[in-house]
Length: 123
Length: 487
Image (cartoon, rainbow over all chains, first blue to last red):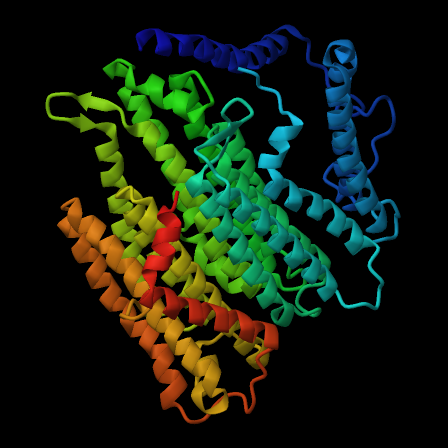
């Protein structure tokens, strides 16, 4: 039992380091760097472009649909890769299983298509 | 042991596979359904799929010999599992039939989705009834939960319904997280995801691990109590029940509860862990005590708060909270036969009374308890059948509800938990008041809110099936009990 709890000490150390590291790094940076602010320096960094508008804008809800679909097919790829690597050992059975899996996602795709998820003006 | 699945094993999963294939085919059919055709066709197809699946189950039951174990013991086909699956399919079939007359276009914009989603929910409950592995159990639970979240949210243009659905999703996800956390403790102690292996390992653990076993049980209890709507975790129920479409409410009240009961039925044997061999103490006795306390709180809170409800669906929500208490009592006495009997009784009376409520609320366009007033003078047959269902809910003799409660009471008295028996009797007596208030409204108020009430034929059939079965199995309980015990 004690051994069991001792394993949590590693977790505790991990959490403490995780919290302390960013605080420590930023504090050290603040102490070391020279401070000479100008107006340009204090603007938001946007890859060298001029920042436009506020950061808290409302995003169109349609992006959410695309994001959902993207995640589904993203996960599909994640599953396909290990299967493709181990294809020789797994053989026909896994091929059929994979076909079932992909065809289920195709059903989802047809559903999204018929529900006009891919059309920008559908909502 | 070979963990792979063979084609011959698929035959044992035929009831589930039937539903699974039906979900795909019917959801595709729904997409290509003619625009001006009635969506009731989807409902009819759903009903056929459910009945075919039930047919395979009955075939399986007749030819069952012992326990069939699939996928490295994670999926079991066994006696009580098949019974629970049959109960789930019976309930969902009745709910689909009730929906033909109850679901309207102006309420629910996506009727096709409504019928299709009932099937994965039933499939989730069936998977839970078959699995002996915590991962399979959790997948079944989530399939059931996620489908029911969408079902609750189907009244898209109704603000209150959206609010209730959102609360249900957030609270339900938290409850799932609690269950998962409890499972993780069991996995940590037992070193396996298989419930039988966990149970065997827990028995041999040294006593310093026992607090962790208690922690795992209390975490599971939170999630379980939430989904069952047992008392300290019941607060979502009245709001969700009053805002969701009524057939969906009957689904939550019956099928979700049945699924959670089978869930706990699988988990409780894990806790037969000996504490003190001299005094014959086990952790299980503490588990039973906890279940008794939750049951007592559920019965008291459910029945007392129901007294002051004006909304009929909120009233039935508190009645179902009280029933969750009765279920917990029978679960703790470890009598699966009585559990199945009361579950069938509860299914029949709850679905029957909700079928009546759908017809009345669609006619009156509100859910106040006054929809029942003067029902005897406008629709005498419906009124009389409602009386029988209410008497069964209240537990008056010559109904299934009475016999079910009587069996539960006998079980409690046999294990000498007299305080719980007392609470059960007293709270049942309290419940008479609010059930009889509905009956009084039907007979004593001559003026009705509606001049004529059209009860759709399919709804009438559902009510009639529920009433006839409630009375038949009260007079001849031996038929059902022998079917339950039949091996």
